[in-house]
Image 1 (spheres, rainbow, N blue to C red):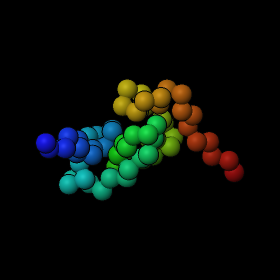
Image 2: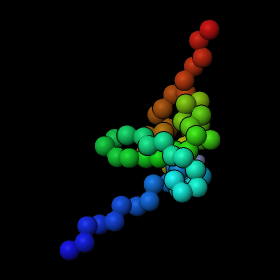
Image 3: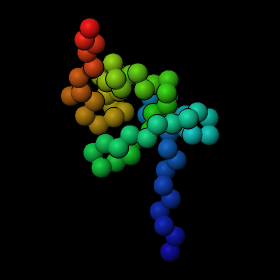
Length: 67
Ligand SMILES: [Zn+2]
């Protein structure tokens, strides 16, 4: 029996794989998600733009800059 192959990690925003761009792994809801450095700011500042790509993104609040 072969183990189920893991899906290739790819950026949740642009779907590029680690062969194309460095990926940052996100540990979230007992799952692994990956995002590239180019789209990491989306997760921080515009999480709602990831609705449909990351579960629960609609409930995530953007980080607020406090000076
Ligand atoms: Zn990306």
